[in-house]
Length: 389
Image 1: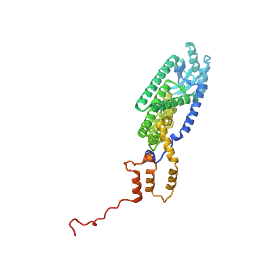
Image 2 (image 1 turned 180 degrees about the vertical axis):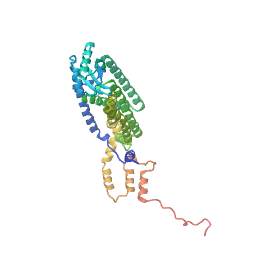
Image 3 (image 1 turned 60 degrees about the horizontal axis):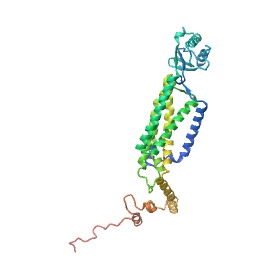
C-alpha cells in the first residue's frame, strides 16, 4: 500500500490526527486577511470587466511578427481612440479592444493597423462592436441564479442535515466567491461570460466536498449525549481526518484537467477562450477545498458547541480530565510498574456515570477479576466417579 494509503488508514482509525477544528482561530485569521485584501482590492481597483459587460469595439487581424506594444501603438495612432486599448494574442492572431466607436472611427482604426503592419488593406481586419446591455443581462441572470442556488442549498441542508450545517456551508460558499472575485480584482484578470459560468460551477464543487465531510460528521456525532466520552469538536475533527485523503485525491484529480486547460491550452497553445473558464475554476477549486476543511467544519463545531447539551458534555469531560484522581492515574500510567490490565480497571471505575462497560458488566466486578485473576477451574480426575469406591 502507498504511503498516502497508509496515512489515510491511520487517520481513519484515529491512530494519527491533525487538529483542524482546534486550530480554527488560525484558519479564521488566514481567511480574514485574504478577505480584507480582496475587499480592499475590489474597493480600489475594481474588476477588469470584459467588452461583453462594458461594451466596446474589437479588431482582430493577423500579424505574426508584431508585438503587444506595436499593436497598441498602431491602434492609438488612428487618433480616435482615447482610452488605452486592451491587446491580446490569440490562436488566430491579435485582438485589440477599444471603447465603442462609430463606423467612421472603425475605418480609421482599420487603416492605421493596415498601414502599420503592411496589410493588403483594411479588409484584412475584422471589426465588431458589442453593446453593454448584453453583458448586463448576463450579470442579472447570473445573480438571480446565484440567489436561487443559495436558497435551495439552505433548504436541502436544513432538511437533510440541520440548520447549523446549512449556515456553515453558505458561509463557506460566500468565502469562496469573495476570494475568487478578489483575486480577479487584485491581478486584474478580465471578467468575461466564461468567468461567470466558471464562478457558478465552483459553487457546486465546493458544496459537494463540504457535504461529504458533513455526512461523516453526522455519522460520528449521531450518538453524542452528555455522558459521551468525546466532544462534538473532537468527533468533527475525527470526521475531517477520516475524509482528508479522499478530499485531497478529489481536489488533485479535479485540478489536473483544469490546470491542463489553463497552463497548456491557454498559456502554451494560446487558446484565450479557454483561459476565462479555466482560470476561475482553478482558483475557485483551491478555495473550495480549503474552505470545506478549514472553514465549514470548524465553524459548524463552533455553532454546535453552543448547544446546552454539548456544553454539559464539554464541561463534564473537562472536569473529568482535570480531576486529581485522573491526574494521579496518568502519572501511574507513565510508570512501567503499572500493568495495562490495572489501568483498564481504573478507567472503568473512574467515573460514576461510566459504571458499566459496553457489555453491561459492572465495573466493580471487572476490577475484582483484574485483581484476583481468572477463576480457577477444577482439575480433571479429582472427582470420584459415581460408581467408584
